[in-house]
Amino acid sequence: MEVIITNSGEELSCIVADAICKALASRAEPALGLATGSSPLPAYRELIRRHKNEGLSFAHASAFLLDEYLGLPAGHDQLYRTFLEQNMTGQVDLDPARLMGPDSSTGDVTAECARYEKAIQDAGGLDLLLLGIGTDGHIAFNEPSSSLASRTRIKTLTRATREDNARFFGGDLGAVPQHVLTVGVGTILEARHLVLVANGPAKAHILARAIEGPITAMVPASALQMHPRVTVVSDAAAASGLQLADYYKETYAAKPR
Ligand code: GLP
Picture 1 (cartoon, rainbow, N blue to C red):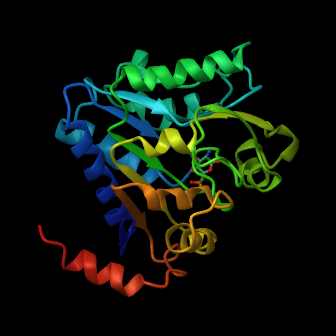
Picture 2 (cartoon, rainbow, N blue to C red):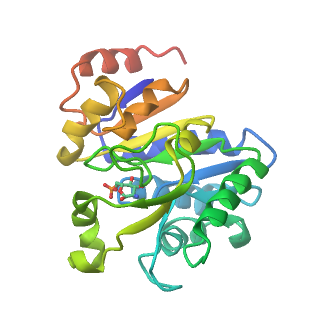
């Protein structure tokens, strides 16, 4: 696992954008797994800038949502599909038909989850999967106690996650859906490169548990320790609980180019 503790928001977003550019160049038809939430937004802005000013193209790529709320009407501004379209894919030349997500309007959740797993396989697997981390250690919407071998399925959100996300629903906890569809931890671990972004002091405690603590279903993000190619990109505040912070900094500074 590579842990990069960045010195500025600009450095953080450039490192994440560089990794995505590399994935875009890795295959004729690359597939990206893209997180929602606030953590990846600066990197998305950097990618949009590169598209507008430097000719970066997503025309040959597909993008896969990691998760989706159940029970929100089509077009709701908090559907993750809407979020990703507005903040990323709709602002670059990605073909709208190649933005994939679990269909939350489905009447058959089991069939829809199996279809989504197959869609990822049919795309040749995910070349890069960008993740945030919840304050309870969730990745995508794999809440604590999720199986580390789980696949796409329905999950019930914890109260803590719904409280965290209430800010996107006008502060109204009751408006945050209880159920979601999410790729599983097992699905995530099959992507070729995992990039986890963490920023802000609220993530310090859980980031330390995820990276340096034991692998446990109680911290689903700790499963990343089992993946051969993970890059954690953090700001100083989120990295403040890391025991080996100095080592990670020395390692990155001395990284053979
Ligand atoms: C949400 C999403 C996750 C995201 C996480 C952290 O609930 N399902 O994909 O990584 O919470 O969000 P944020 O980056 O806003 O802290």
